[in-house]
Length: 410
Ligand SMILES: *Cc1c(COP(=O)(O)O)cnc(C)c1O
Image 1 (cartoon, rainbow, N blue to C red):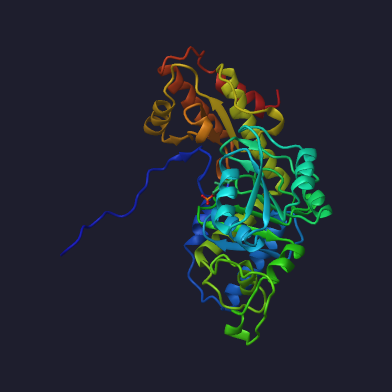
Image 2: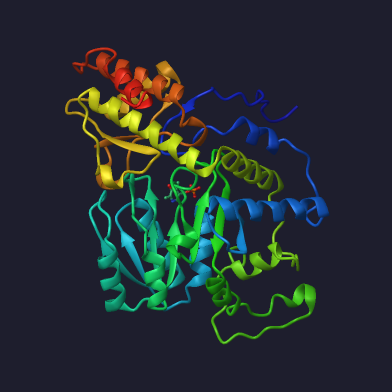
């Protein structure tokens, strides 16, 4: 016998209280174990249609084009930008965190002309500032991140999409980290394209992009479709616009695949479709408002627990996300050592940070299946213990009492 034999996969049962991925709902894991179907099987295509309908509710939209992108959340971001942005188009991007930088990085590769609205990490743009920048730069697209896990901060979006439409600008928002945790009000905001993923507050595994596209944006994207439709239906469209610079992420082709035309593109990732469908069912059965409140309470309990231990939170209360909390690492404490102790002694993962916040804050997530009182209590009890053992002067029980007070409404 050649090669190495490995034992069956048997990962430790960690509690993932970082900025994502989070633990997956057991129902989603079970759905993923279901049998494969052929991609044009009527049973499969009806699951695809059901998934579209479910995600319209999750994204709070009537957008027909609400579907999955096979790949991680980043795949959906790239699909949105490469399909909406022609080389040389101007794109205005809010630059206030790690994922705002990603929007610039992707746009640069597309050959867009990039203008950024720059803020320190943890700060947000006002509607007036965005409007002024749109008037000044006249971009083709406005793009930003809703909740950026790197800063634990959520950009307010009320009125933003509507305002963009007034100036004939397409709007794109990355809501990967907030979908399922706090309102992502696509139609109310009037945003053209919003994308997300499953592994944050949707409680699914990583590897699935979610996207919703307005008719207005879809019309523009279809106007960039060139000749490849000839493969199945014999039509040849000739467009004046430049062809979308990606085959895999060509949203015109992907929409045609999800339409009743079922024009062949990729093979839909069957097990991931089951996962996405199940995750949306769980969220909608609970009810959006109940799920958001469960997240808000969990994060408030973590925040109050941290404050009760004398720790300081990063960011502002008014713009805090509902599912991740930034906590400053106190002087003379080794942040990585604390994370290692949390993992090694308690099987709990908490997050470190990137860029200007690297080594300065921890990030504790309360996402999806993990946004529940007992997981919050476990995390705070462990965190308090580990910090005390590292030499912080904390009265035992303070953190947990503060968390109980949040849940008991005191
Ligand atoms: C996690 C995250 C992503 C990246 O998701 P992947 O699934 O790793 O591609 C993008 N944007 C935001 C805001 C995120 O929080």
